[in-house]
Length: 191
Image (cartoon, rainbow, N blue to C red; front, side, top):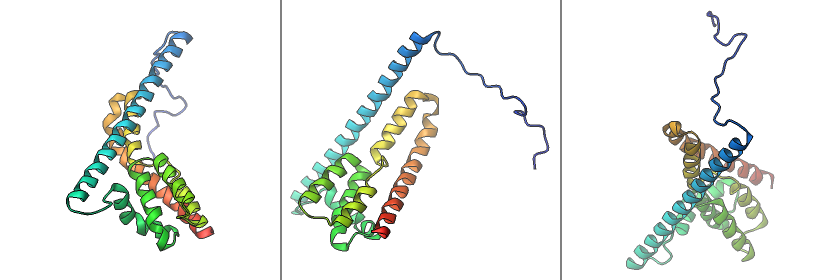
């Protein structure tokens, strides 16, 4: 139990520095801060998508050298994430497709994964059940690119806490991924 008198008992004194002298300066400052934040987000997305495209091209080139047809990030994702898709409730025959979507969502972005989900649905590769499970499994910003966005965006706002943000970002990613997979597994149980 607490035996000392708390420092905050009765009164809480918070020193908030005033950055702006008036409303106009605050509006200009807010617009400038949002521009920096938006620029960081766009730069991080372009950088991560560029890295993914480079890796995909390198894998394809290596596949051609060693006569491994279809060696891409998507094919690797489908192998790695197929069991996870199956655990979510997708049939084994469709788990390869949903597994590749899960990998794309985690390592690329959910936008690309949703576009590919739409393509798979239009080609008749997925049942309604697999489509519903995949829709929920892809529904979050928990991906590697979001770590860069999170670190870059928050560091622009609070630069002195960049190290702390960098340590917490992968944990937030992991929590987001597990939350998403739990939601998708509930859909798998209900359908």
